[in-house]
Length: 124
Image (cartoon, rainbow, N blue to C red):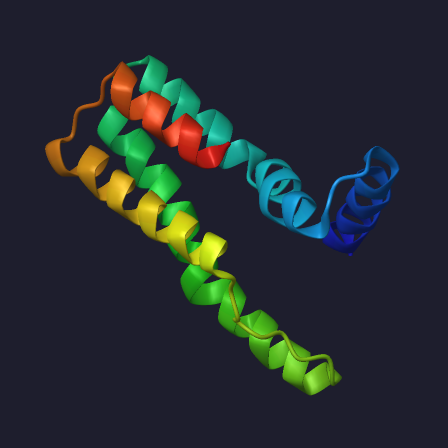
């Protein structure tokens, strides 16, 4: 119920600022919905726990991909409002690049400023 209120208020605010649905859904709701995980990952990274920080971030994305999305698909079918997993080429390329960059960063267990810049550019 609280999530429904959050999404409703974010949608209204997004419309007020002229943001598109993709931006609101992928960026704003993603940041607000996972604020606790983001703050934990940032605090751990600042203390030198970059491997655990990356694990938190990757685990959050994996949780959404493997648990929430299938539930949304089945709930959409049950409610008569299908939720398809059809993505545009731009979205597929972005997800593919994010997976590659995350793999490169997590592989060696260390990070540097250039890897951080790559992640920020991909996010932007």
